[in-house]
Length: 387
Image (cartoon, rainbow, N blue to C red):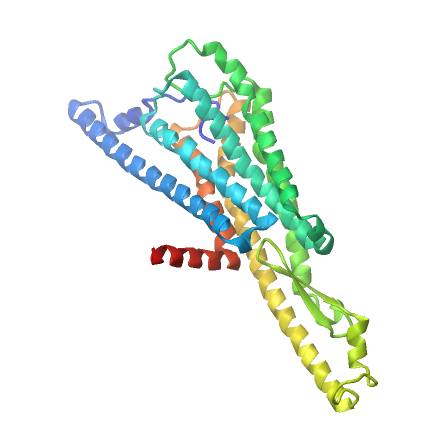
C-alpha cells in the first residue's frame, strides 16, 4: 500500500547513499564508487520491479479475458474472482508504476495533486483487493456449509452487492487523509506520504484494511477446512443407509460436496416386485446393488480427493495473503504508536512491494488450482494461436 499508511518522518532521500558511504569511507574514489554502485542498484531494482508490475498486469488481464470470453465461467463465484482480478489490474496500472519511480528515486517530483491521486488510488485499490478475498471466502463458506439453500440465493445481483460493499468500505478508508493534506497543497513536495500524526486514522485504516479482514479470513477458512475434512473422513454409510444417487455440488473453490439422496422412486425400481427384465430375481437385485455401491464409493473417493485439493488451496491462499501483507501493516502500526521506533527505508520498501506482490499471486492461486479455469486458459491460448 506504498507509503499510504506509514509514518516515515525519518525517510530521507539520501538514506541508502549515506549507508554506502559509511561502509566505504569518504574519499573521492569511494564516493565515485558509491555513486556508480548506487546507479547500478537503481537500474537493477527498476528492472526487477518493472517485471513484477508487468507480470501482475498481464496475469490479471488474462484472468479477466478468460472469464469474459468463456460462457461456462459466467457464474456469481467467478464474477467475484473477476472483480478481484480487475482490482489487482488497477493496482498494477495506476499504483505500481509510479511506486517504481518513487521507490528508486526517493524523491517525489509529481506535485501535490498527483500525490493525492496516487495515495488515494493506492489505499483504495489495495484495500479493495484485500476485502475481495473476504467476500470470496464468505461466498465459499456459504457454498460449502449451506450448499443447497445458498445455491438458490447465489446470484449475479448478490455478487454485485458484495462487490459494491467492498468498494464503499475501501473508499471510506482512503478519503479521510485528503482533508488534512490540502492544508499543505501550496508547499513544494519532496515526499508523498500520509500525515499519520492522526493516530486515530492509522488505527481505523490498518484495522479496517487488514487486521479485521485477516481475522475474518482465518475464521472463515478455518470453518471451511473443518467442513471439508469432515466430508473427507465421512464414511459412505454415514451419507445414507441405502446406496442410491450421488450428487456432486461444485463450488467456486473447484472442490465438491458429496451428498447422497434417497428417493422412493429408486427404491421402487429395486423392489423385488418391480417391473423390468429380470428385475424380480434376487441375482439381478444383488447385481444392481453392487453396481450402485461401487458407483457411490467411486464418487466418494472423487469427492474426497477434490476436498483434499481444496483444503490445500485454502492454505496457500491464506498463507500467501498473510506473508505478503502482515509485515507492512505491523511496521505501519508500530511506527504510528511508537514515535521513537525507526525502520530502514529499504526494509519498508521491501514490505511495501511484498504487499503489491499479493496482486500477482492472487490470479495464480485462484485460477491455477481451478480445473475449469485451466481448461478455459488452454482453449484461449489455442484460439490465439489460430490467429
